[in-house]
Length: 68
Image (cartoon, rainbow, N blue to C red):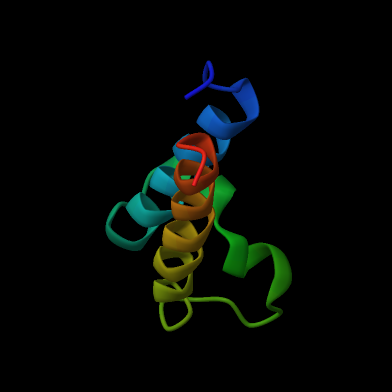
């Protein structure tokens, strides 16, 4: 296993922030929400989409970091 890439670590951190955006309402999580960036009618009903995308982004970064 090689040394961790800064990009991989950032992607894992972003995935965690997206997952936290489902449960927490803070300025950081509100600014990083993907649904509010791309969906015109984003609200509480589209908030769970961030958890799914956070799992995908963070999981893929972790998987590629581990060299699988």
